[in-house]
Image (cartoon, rainbow over all chains, first blue to last red; front, side, top):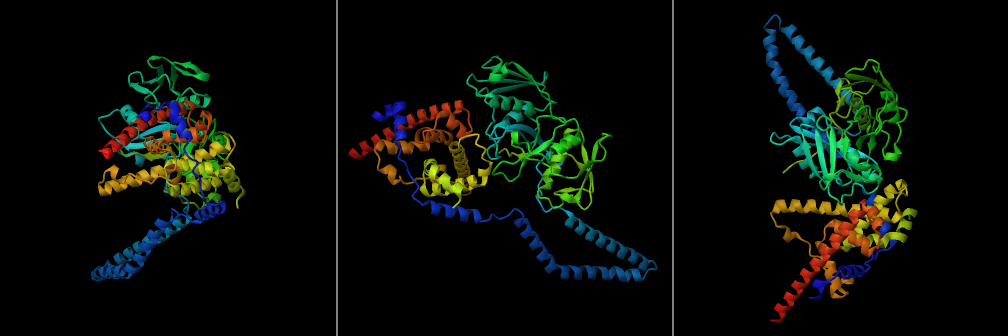
Length: 396
Length: 181
């Protein structure tokens, strides 16, 4: 019976007495296992698609003679019919010419493939095709070192019977920030309420909330709110603490309300690459730039105070062809030195998100020798992304 | 041998191993996980900026390794359960008590068992605070939490342990009564 009455002190004292279990292996043994574990190479990402392509090639080689025979036997009949007509040779000639054109096209396509990048093929952002049937909600999530908030756009299935705010709140519970290499921040430790008429979100925090513990926590909290609500739906946030007016945030004092400034204009995007994630995130700067050229030139520099890396390769030759006539489409010249540059797809996406933030909706890239970057054909105008950093959440 | 490895081994190896052992309660798994810690440390050592102490930085890596391990385990178990339609109780691990614990007084064995009833967060705080004797602020740094979260989690963990110790005690007594009959 005594144990059921253990005091806190007694429990603490028992915990302190837990034995010092130790690793019996020698340092050398451990070091050798680490070395061999590090050497054990992972299956590279490209290997499986590569093997699949090889399998397809083998099948094509095996099946092609029979396919050719089949095609020839089909072609034999029209040929004899054409011979009986005066236009036959002409028509046949046209047909042959078409085939030749087709073959030329095919060899041109092959050429394009040679000119494409061998780096990463999957883009990070959300594009208009992704959004079909989905609702895109962007949450600004702090990184683990609380240096920066990363805008993560979550795609969830669209429903008609819930408001966006209900879905925003529901999805907030499902975010798997740690799996994404970010800090576990959501759901917010607060009651949220939305008033559509005044476009206001009311936030009521408990008295013991931790958003005011230190200036970093305070700044992260306000940044997260600034960047997590869509500016077309929320213009203002009003704070209360257990129903009483305002929230106390040390260096900011008692804040009663905050206007959302929708600061997503003229920002430059950088790379944030946390450990253990298969792809980096593209994160905008806090400050806006007066010119696109200035933004691009800054994107060649690491932003160490925020833990962000340059998103453009140093010394990239990048000319804005139509900056003066600001319109829908941004035209850029990119020199082909970036050809073969690993992960240039992320640089292109950083360019696109930056261009979007400067008000453009499409991008046309003029370049020599590069035809394709990831899924994007540089021969065509590329529609700019809808939002950065896509994650999909399935609701069961 | 790598000098970074050597230095970390000398200063912190047994601490890291002990933390991981009490997290997973399996020596072989703890051996694997501590190796994973070194792999991550050796990869990231150049980027360690000294904003936090080396010790709390290493514990923060060990914590991430442990959390990743539990996440993988959870995923695997969920998959097995879906495929085989088993209840969670049937796949719950029943690991034997390690010698070091078995040799201790009964209450130590009980509290060791009760640790399983704590959440992962509670367990991490308990281990860092009472076995590794980290201060509140060091624990907060290692777990990337606020000090207030450390305090409340620690409080809840101790409360939970008191409750489980009480329940466990009743079970033991009931067992003894049945045996006596």
